[in-house]
Image (cartoon, rainbow, N blue to C red):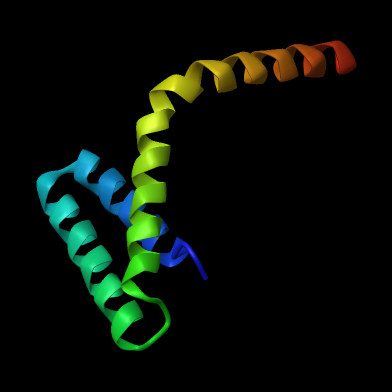
Length: 88
């Protein structure tokens, strides 16, 4: 599959682990690297699939600051609807 979502999710997990701490980040990036190697070595993906997965993960991570306010306002609107539908 193009892009490799296996690799994209492992890259996102590595970023989250790196935010937790240095040792956790090293473990996360080691896992992502090992998984990437295995996916290509075992013929599950081409290198370009991994690069596209990496680009997807990095693009989502870069877009988060721009998208977060929109999602917060949508969440507030849904919560307001819930309060109207189920008044206490």
